[in-house]
Every structure is written in structure tokens, then in C-alpha cells.
Length: 115
Image 1 (tube, rainbow, N blue to C red):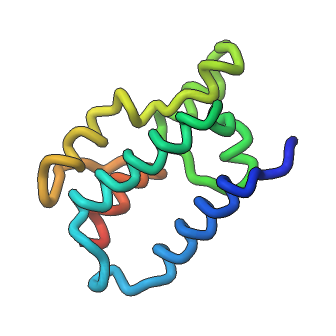
Image 2 (image 1 turned 180 degrees about the vertical axis):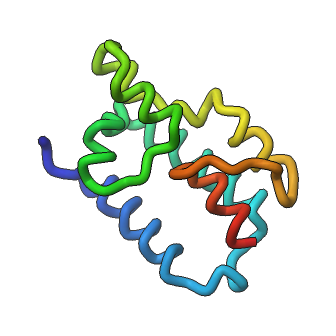
Image 3 (image 1 turned 30 degrees about the vertical axis):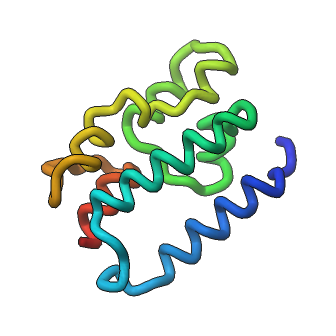
């Protein structure tokens, strides 16, 4: 497993900082959802994302769809894509407050719970 890049370490630090704050101090779940999408899209512009298997090995919670990608016989490139980019949960989370979604391991679902 390769070491994390400076950009990846910054993203992990940002995520940990957000997790440690009181949810009442956060922005709306719609705004947080849009920010997450923008951050992941920006990170993907600089090169391939870490594979979902690597993310899971580092302790990231994976949603059921991400787990499916990990176990499916797909190439490395498919494993580095962002399944959230085509997920209905992301679309709902970015447009509704609160969105009617619940998937274990889904960051968009987590935003709904803390609103």
C-alpha cells in the first residue's frame, strides 16, 4: 500500500476536524453534501483517487455500493472511481433538507443524521 499524498493527508485532516465539531455548528446537510462532492471532484482532477479497497483498509466506512465495487471483478481504474458521482443518495442529499436516505457508510447519509 502506498503512502498518502500531502493532498490526501489534508483531506483526512479536514474530515477528522469536521467529525470532532458539534453538529449544531455545521452548515446545512445540503451544503455539506455539495462541498463533499466538490472536494472529491477537485481531488479527482489531480489524478486517480485511492482505491476503495485501500480506503476501506485505512478504516473508511464504505457504503453497500462501494463494497460491491470492491468485491466485483473490476480493474484498478474502476476501483478508483467515485461511485457517489452516480449515486441517488448524493443527488437527494444535495437537493433536499433533510433528504430521505439512509445507507450505512454513506457520508451523505451521515450529513442528514447530524442536521
